[in-house]
Image 1 (cartoon, one colour):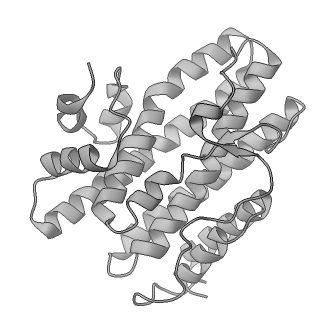
Image 2 (image 1 turned 90 degrees about the vertical axis):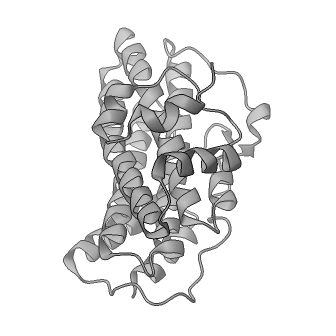
Image 3 (image 1 turned 45 degrees about the horizontal axis):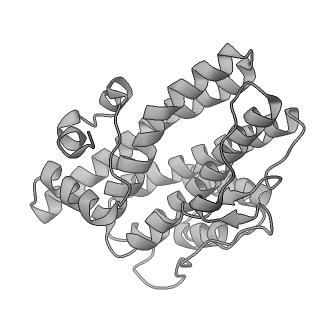
Length: 266
């Protein structure tokens, strides 16, 4: 099996637990050389949309119930469920970039995004275990269906994919997660806070990979990274870049304020 075939297998697997199992198995096989290299462009082709289980019910973001405060068990459950849904999508986004763009890129590109997929699978599994501790499970609550839009909008362009997914969406996770950690610790949920701290720290390496490969693509295209990223964000990201930014964590990823500060809202 090639790494692209493995990636498409994950993308076409609906059951979340099996998606996690396959992701971790294929990542280990890639690291040990048990999986073959990337074949030239062609089949198997990644799907436009990954397979999904019957639950959770997927809704448009505007139709989601209002967020509850993290102080109650119900509020913490809703928070962890929402984060688990993000991590499930992140598994598929990582495998999609391998399948869609890996051919023709250096091996290090696939090394990085297979590792990201492995991390996201580990995160999802960790959050599911936390949901079980809270008496719930993934699929028990509705989830919003806007997360895959970034993939569809950037399926034609690696620079755009890197600009939006790791360098907007994952970078935003670096901004908002520390407050979630503080809120969970304030209500005595150290287990939940510890899980989010692991996710936050891993996401720094994911943003770093996005920045590294975005700059690689820009170098190959002979275009300047900062204005190119800003133009791609203006074109492909409709939500606007919101302050405040976690500059400490972004700097650890090598993602300087010169990229995002000039085009941020406010």
